[in-house]
Length: 254
Figure (cartoon, rainbow, N blue to C red):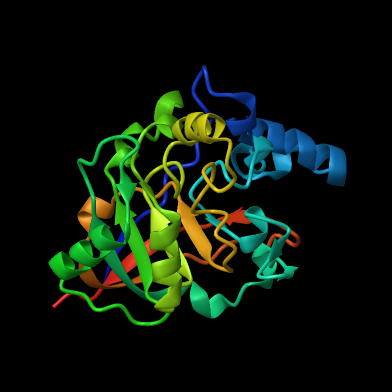
């Protein structure tokens, strides 16, 4: 079996990243670990191999949506289909390990809409017929921007109608290698203000359906269109709107 890592590395955010999007990590080395062990247990460095204690790291700022992550329905609205929306710990694990398909939209312009006909064409090109609980991965090529503050401003996005179309075919997990499943929010914001209508901003998220998105994927270009299994198990954060996940694709080697 060959495993392809679809998860972005977790690193401190570059300068210029908005506070709400920042990841900050403090690293504690082995010398500090030895000091902590001495304080906690009275064991001096002379009793430790090479005088060293444990290394440790601390997230001082790490939003659940700031790495490769899985969204729960609760992220989109407090109620979905008239019922309390499920949080990430309430979703069935059976959703998150299933056959995958990559739909290739690399090269589409920022703000392009990926609609139902686009999905149908990409599925035909992939030679894949959707089955319930397949995990649909949308490749845009936007992972090239993932280390840059302007990452969230790039990419096409999936329409609300296309999201509904996938859901109607039994898809409960759908992912993308852009910052979000919707088109860039700055574009949707301009359109929402100009139209004065609900349903324009965050269109695909707020379709009132209980499904999950994987956002901030990488390396979709390393996968074949179909013939692999995706594992995207989220951390069980009780009450969470999302959780980080180590997303991988598993391919059988002949």
